[in-house]
Amino acid sequence: MLISIVAPCYDEEDVIERFHDQIQKVAEELLPLGHDMEFVYIDDGSRDRTLMVLERLAGLDKRVRYVSFSRNFGKEAALLAGLRNASGDCVVVMDADLQHPPELIKRMVELRAEGYDQVIARRTRTGDGMVRTLTARLYYRFVNRLMDVELVDGVGDFRLMSRRVVDAVLDLTEYNRFSKGLFAWVGFPATTFEYENAAREAGRTSWSFKGLLNYGLDGLLSFNNRPLRAALYLGMGLLLCAGLYTGWIVIAALVHGVQTPGYVTIITAVTGVAGVQMIMLGVIGEYTGRIYYEVKGRPHFLVKASNVERKADCPTDG
Ligand code: UDP
Ligand code: MG
Image (cartoon, rainbow, N blue to C red; front, side):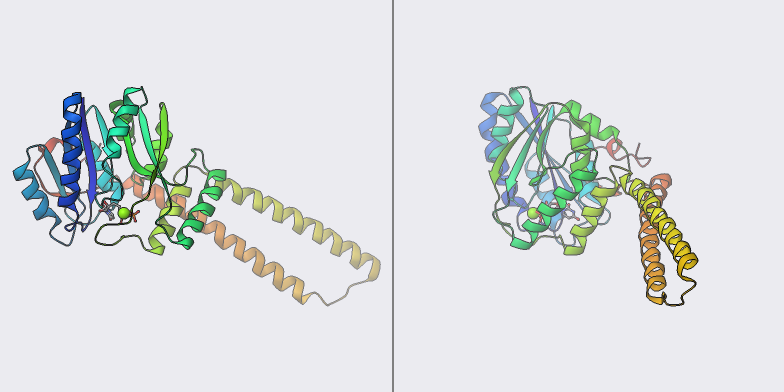
């Protein structure tokens, strides 16, 4: 069995070599069991010497493939490029910053042999700060209420996928990619196992709070149209309230005569409704924006340098 390791690298010059060393040790242990390995590294437009390091690794090790983007296209694009360029019978997706322990690959391969198409590593959030853990927990609780696919906290991209899962994921050509959701959407027999989260070895996380917020919104919006439906229900609810209230005022005016006070009510109603309308316009705008990006059909990434043949990064992106 040929196992492809797919690792996106963004400004990882400090760790990438160590990562490769560790993976290679695992590869040596798997070789007697009849498993070959290849490495697909994607340089996501790094500003440091990541590409040089990758070129050197490729020179030393024939099993290394690398693709380097013309600029930073984001981890999702890097993952896509990695999956397209992986030729293995199964693919392991992992971060290059050594937060995903390479030794776990052996465990994944064992579980794959038991017939699972996706072997998912679920990390415990021991290394994370309180705030991030808490926001993550709240987010997942909220999102799973709304979403068509179920997301699990701690489950990231670190997973093994069989060829048919990879092919299925590659068939999803949408521009706004939310891999966590895509992997879950594809289905096939899957199993999950837990591992202890390791702290980042070097460099620093490229996630800002804003980045996480946007990522969260992407997850929420790319898998369902329930926010649109919610807008409809909210509108109907408001209309009903408005109707009841108008009825009440008319009756009160008939019984007690017209009374002028009501300034507070009017202001509250106007601002409240305006606020709700703004939110809902925003929701519609989000979906429209997504459609806009999909319709343009731009490629997910552009390649600057690579040691794999041209076919895999076809410009039509289909
Ligand atoms: N990454 C990438 N492009 C980006 C940001 C990150 O390819 O724009 C890669 C990064 O090199 C790493 C992985 O994605 O291998 C996870 O990134 P990071 O460690 O910053 O995220 P975290 O582990 O904090 O979720
Ligand atoms: Mg990391």
